[in-house]
Image (cartoon, rainbow, N blue to C red):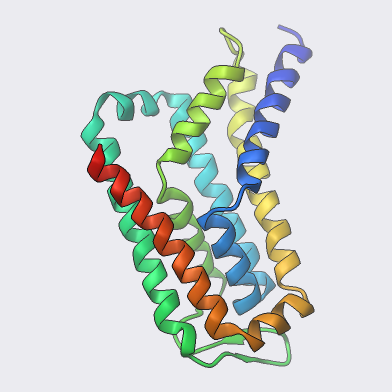
Length: 217
C-alpha cells in the first residue's frame, strides 16, 4: 500500500469530521461562552478537552466498541440519557449564574465567584460535554466505515486518532480565539444575563432532545 492509499482516505475522513465539528451544537456554545466569559486560556483549555473527547470517540470507533453499542441497545440508550442529563445540569448552572456579576481584571481574566475556575475546570467541562453525546461516536464510526478502505493499513489506523484530535481541537481553538477578542467580550459583559440564559436554553434543548430520544428508544 503506497502513501496515496493512506493520504486520500485520511484527508477525506478529516474533512468530513471537520464539517461536522463546524456545525453548531453544545460544544460550540460551551467553548464560545467559556472564551468570552473566562478568557482565552480557559477557552483554549475547553478546546483541548473537546479534542481529547473526539480522540476518545475515534479510538472507540476504531476498536469496534461502537458495534457493541449498536448490539446492546440499552447501553447506548443509557449513555444518551446520561449525556442528556449532563447537558441539562450544565444548562441549569448557566441559567442560575446568569445574574451573577462578572468582573474582568487588568490581565483579561474574568471571574464571577465559583462559576469560573480557570483552564483546568474549562478542560474538564469541555471533555465531559464532548463525551456527553454518544451520537458523535456513531457518526465517527459511520464516517470511518464509509471512507476507509476495506483493508486499512496500520499507519492509517494509527494516524486517524491524532488527526481527529487536531481537527476537533483546532476548530474549537479558533472559536476560542475569536470569541475571546475584545469586541465579543465587551458584548458579553454588556448582555451577560441574556447571553447566559440563551446559552443555557440551547444546552437544555439539546439535553432534552437526547433524553427524549433515549426514552423513545
